[in-house]
Length: 82
Image (cartoon, rainbow, N blue to C red):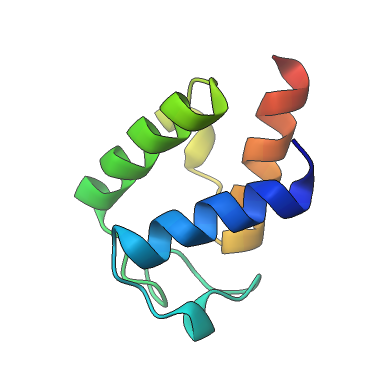
């Protein structure tokens, strides 16, 4: 799966499941402040990502992920490790 497919999958989930407006999904969007993703949303995201991408998200690794682009990077890098 390439980066574009990762971005499309993540964005579709954010739009459909968390009801985030597509125009707010910019690379520099802050997950908590701009997209209003809270800790419960992160749990949902982790489950979906783990099921769809077959990778395990570690909470301690997510502490430094603040921007949507960093989240894409995180998923892409975890997939390369797998």
